[in-house]
Length: 107
Length: 121
Image 1 (tube, one colour):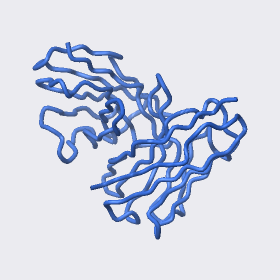
Image 2 (cartoon, rainbow over the protein chains, first blue to last red):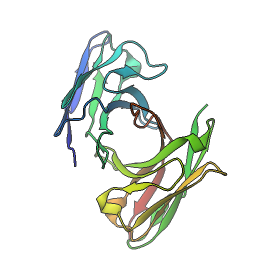
Image 3 (cartoon, rainbow over the protein chains, first blue to last red):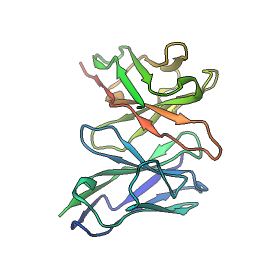
Image 4 (cartoon, each protein chain N blue to C red):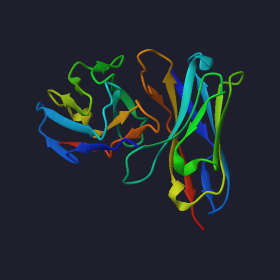
């Protein structure tokens, strides 16, 4: 099973600031990595797939990068509505696995 | 608008069974694979099971193999998860999720709101 390790666990950023979230895989994923945003009481939302491809309707301030075992989600110019938990997810090998999440808080 | 509406969750005693259902709308259901993913408090999401577009290919995580069974009915745009011999480790919110069949693969693109399964005596 591929273990996905996200860091940091919690990130506190000022409005307008930049948030950098990391996701490390225990084995290579090629680019089969997605990022999701999850707000309390809402359905998780796909932000990025293929490591760096923004999903339909996702604002340009969300960007993904990386490949193989190291991936990054960057939220530039953070807005109040970006407060959420962010999960990375590998869909390269069964069983599919997720990271434990990074909670992004707005200062 | 894509909608995935789960139902069937609830409180069940250890060793009991539940059947979760997911009713899909807003897209051509038979063109998409489907998964169940669960989320327990304080943990990351955990993929549970997958069913292919035709229903003839299924996958399960090891901890539920032989206890959980996924199926789909393309005529009714529904996917089910039959769960047996439940334990407290199965307590979680269960999400129905959609997966496009594409090359290169997409992964999961839509999630439902979830249905809560609580296993407790």
